[in-house]
Image (cartoon, rainbow, N blue to C red; front, side, top):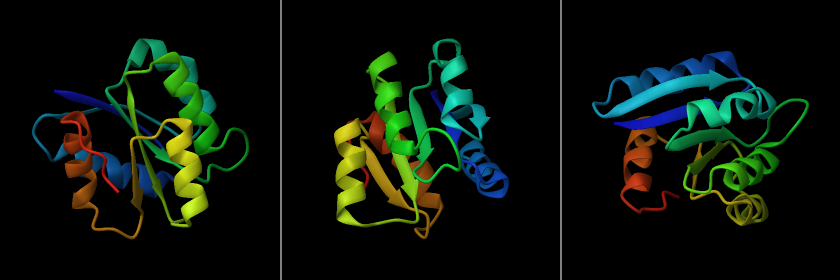
Length: 126
């Protein structure tokens, strides 16, 4: 079972991601958060295998900052950035912060579950 947490400030998108993951056998959504700060408070108790991270979180820590902090605390946890932005400098910054994958929110959302599975098999979804 691959455990995930979702960090996304848009309630509807966050719920949609959870519904997509729940439909796939072998994937577990442990928690959902609207901010990195909330997720980081519970990170050591949730200990997810994979984090789906929004890049543009409103107020507080950005997805890039959150990714760096998650990787510092739980180096084996994989982070997949899911964003509307596809500029190469943002993708590069996310990868430098420790993200293992980067998906565009306009992608087919069924790719989301496959990306979680692929990343645990050593892939790097882009």
